[in-house]
Length: 386
Ligand SMILES: Cc1ncc(COP(=O)(O)O)c(C=O)c1O
Image 1 (cartoon, protein in one colour):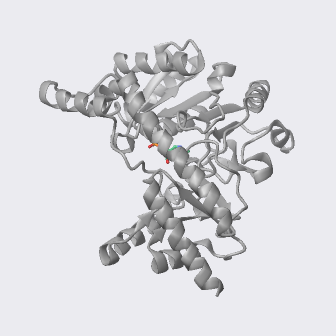
Image 2 (tube, helix red, strand yellow):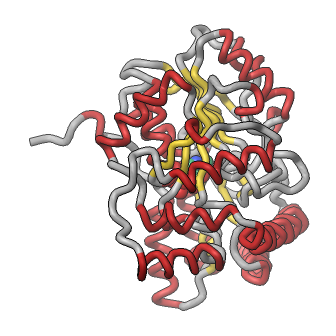
């Protein structure tokens, strides 16, 4: 018997890089991974303490579907602290990573056959998940000029009004942050055109000067996606959340109760401590390191002749055009790994059309490693040019 049509989604190609990088580490012990958005640090100390205490004293069984009240409240309060917003805990639904949240959002908002726009390059799992749900992707071509973010002009130029728009700011793979005025305009456009906006804000907290604006600042019609994975350095805890507009709250709750029952209890309990001042101090020190890593790349990459990129405003990614170096980024990244031990992500995951001549660097590792990676890349490039 054949697998279903809907399961015929693209794999996450970067997992191939992960396999090759692990093999390199086993054989040579010198691998430097710049290919994955995995912070080099564990969850903040207060979270780890809360988790240890909970393991020894609590049952940690199923929780209510939408998540424990204490966590929903601290997340709602976080919108006050970060954006000056009043968010009711009833808007917050705790999910199994933002990935689980996105699935609930997409299922609640779109039927099979719906059209959903998103900028290319973008986060591949969104494209692939929507494909799996029978949703048609409407391509919004991003470029350095529009800083890889959607604009009202792009939406106005579409032949048909889409049913939805997914945007991510800061973006993966480019790290660009949408302008506050543009997000306001895009959000208004979506309301006027009955187009459901899903705003991925999972990298909020990691920015280098520009303010991360929340779509929630412009009303509550959009679905906002959040996560403790990135700023809070808690990827493996599989905990995210949604801010859900009133008319979608029962559908989202019903979907989650069937699909996941609830997010992991241990993660929910411990994550309450992620939103404390003590955690923020620890986490902001990681952001300071990401900022130093970003500066290092902005200085070193042009010296390697890599100049075609938008400087990242946030997250910990830099996405660059390498068409002067290759026409097959997968092959080129494999060559770099084999010659230098540096593992990079080819652009093919993020951009199915132009990704063969782009790559993404992830700079959430240690600064010394990133500096060493640049030294090795410099040697590789000077060797291949000689
Ligand atoms: C833009 C974006 N959205 C969502 C996710 C999924 O994150 P998680 O499920 O860990 O919250 C990622 C992961 O890298 C991402 O880059």
